Structures are given as C-alpha cells and as structure tokens.
Length: 175
Image 1 (spheres, rainbow, N blue to C red):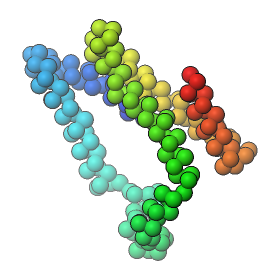
Image 2: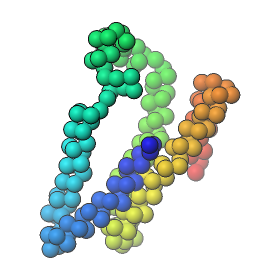
Image 3: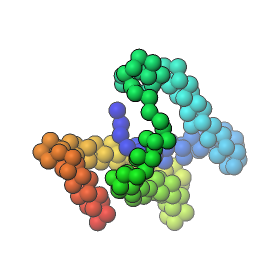
C-alpha cells in the first residue's frame, strides 16, 4: 500500500510521543522511559512476524516449498545464482545507485530529530514531528518516481526506466 521508507517518517513521529508517555508514566526517569518505549516497536515486530509466519505467503503464486514440490519453480543452486548476480555489472550499478539514494535517506532518518533537538532547542516531540516529514515524503515521492519509470518504460522500454532513474536521482542530487 505504501512505498519506500515511509516507516522512517512514522517512527520519527511516533517514538518521541511514546517516549514522552513513558517519561510521564515513570515520573521523569528518562533512561528507563527510553528502554520502555523501545518495547512497543519490539513487541509489534514480534507480533507481525508471527502473523506473517502463520497467515503469510512467500510469493503471489504461493509458498516456495509448495511451488518447488509442484514443479512450478525450478530448484537452483543458491551459490551459483549468487555468483551470477555478483558477476553482473548491472548488479553493482544498481547497488551503488540504491546506496546513494537510500543511504542518505537512512542517515537523515537516523540523525535529523537529534540534530533539531540539540541545535535548535526543540522539545523531542516537535523535533520528531519535523524530522518525520523527511520520511513521510515517501507518500508521494516514491510513487511519482514509479509512475515516471512506468511511463518511460512504455515508450522506451528498459532503457527508459534507466534514464528516468538517472535523471530523477541527478535532480535529487542537485536539490
């Protein structure tokens, strides 16, 4: 439903609010409050992990084991498949591109609220709310990139997708 690292923005927004709730609940014990606050996402991750294991499906067509047993998927040697991928220069181009784009995003999600808190004397909830805007931009930014890529693909094929990726990321770099 949502794309990209929207979760980084939601986390920047929600964790300070959860933390403030635990500060109040622990009568101002800030170190204990952070520990308690991290239990919330930990428990949610555990719950969702169990839900996926019970109700989830590996692929749109079904689960890997079932598809392999039925003969719908050919069983391949993972070492050979990995070697083929590693030896393909396109893999490294995409890895670098993804690292430049997503790496910056993760760095910003990691430090922006703390930076606002330290440098501008904002309270942690306000700093988290402002920092969340960076991750929440994925509501539209990733979707627009996908739409542009799809339109270029219809007209120019895979080369159109590659040019749209290069143009959009170059524009991001300038901005």
